[in-house]
Length: 274
Image (cartoon, rainbow, N blue to C red):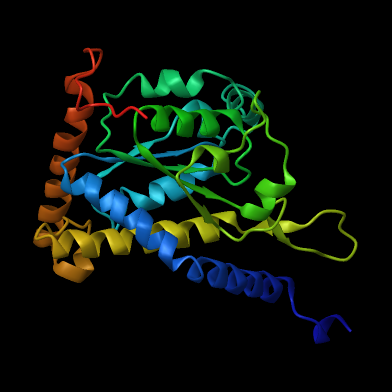
């Protein structure tokens, strides 16, 4: 009887196909995000990326890795994302506690001199934890457009931990959906109380790479093709090294702008008011 049914692996992969359909249906939103991000990069500024917990994965998927390019500022706090120890010092309990600490987002962003020419991507599967919500609010207060990636169904089924009851979707200018179900896990097994095998990372990584490809196309069209981190097996060892060194140098020059005016009074063109 068991052999005639889809295996758990087949079930999971079918759910992943469903996630692909959800992502494919958001082409117009992907294009809008890419337009904002490309505008920031072409202005010599950066796209700020933030994710706590396992939402750091799409952040690092965007940059830096093979097939990616400078223009993105991955903000990943180890206190919120370092899960390897699980328990004890630097354990998961502390990370989950800190993710709902009011004021932490503002302290993180105090390290950067932002500009209204910047843009931002904030990732949170539930969209209900305090730090990602406050991070999006902080960006918006600085006149920065915010793209949020959430699991819509998970977000809708969850209760916000923010004091005002708002969710990340309420603090974003554009929302993208990973397609993952409530609770994230997608495979239900007979005899097992709760589902297994999450899907938000799959949907999130498809979204960020779709955006990345669209951004690259816009940079090329504007006459500023990006320096893409590329493997030696594709372009040869010498060219691969040139691309890596050049991309890292460009990242350094871009991120230097986030520090050079840190703590200085804001100039009228630095922050837009609404």
